[in-house]
Length: 447
Image (cartoon, rainbow, N blue to C red):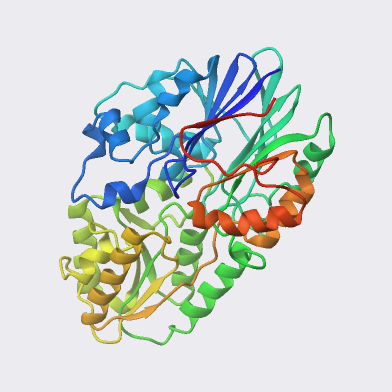
């Protein structure tokens, strides 16, 4: 059986992930993502009303025209998790393919919301919910399996396409976490089985976000402990405390809510994406929040919540807000500019339970946000966080578990691949032979 892999997006940058695997006449597409930095650099860009070709030209979504060079039919579109760099282009591209979108429950709900918000295209692909540990048939000779992984969003999976020539493991995005705050640990046992059954693993496509970082990425339990330590140290502070994190990081949000209550403060979730992700997680039963927890996304309802906090006393509340990357329209950035009823005073605390995504647009916006907050007197607690991506020891562990014949690094630029190329070479892989550093728009023929 001929096996080809089209590296469509996410092979020259962090973002706009998209990969297609052809096994005989059957094609499976993994991820259709957005490059957020290409959107954020424009002021007030409304992508919902834009044509896909315009977004392709500006580098915001994958250029999927290379798909016409694959001789076969798309049988499934499979997003690995609900981050926008993996699902943000589905509403723009999925309608081109007569194929269902297959995803884990939380991811599928977020995909539905993307489709509902779309203003340009009608996306009518069937939606199929599939849990980790389950499989479905792809054509007559292949199977698609979901393996549970741990990441900075719940319900993340690594899809595996089982072919007669061996398994194709699409390894974006994960860390090896044996003590997650929400959900099951990563299923390393299943990865080891896949590496040793049948024809083994023909190809492993790997997320190289932290491939230049030595050691091991800590568990979410470590971030939870750090966060509790910071918040409990502020128990006697009688001014304002504000926290921000990734809205999609449900485990972190639940920790913030819990620790706010531990020090006698009422948590409030503020911002459109904060309401969206937490509300979705609660609705599908993936997370539970206190019955009286306020979640406000609309600008007017957010401002009303801020006014109530100011009237009743900042010392009684802990707002959890959007804006960890300094996004111009997010709540924390508006607070820094003095555009909300919430008034920051000298000594007020702002906890960033997130790192800056290492990309110039984010770094510039975050720098500006912190400076604005500092000018209002806020004191910043930075980097109370652990990454959602493997560091070098995690990469060694995955290569040992899967023992793939071929490896394709992804989710980085060429500089970001350097650490992975070095560690793979130490495991016996050779650049150009079985270690393939590629770019967007290429097709690799493995069999």
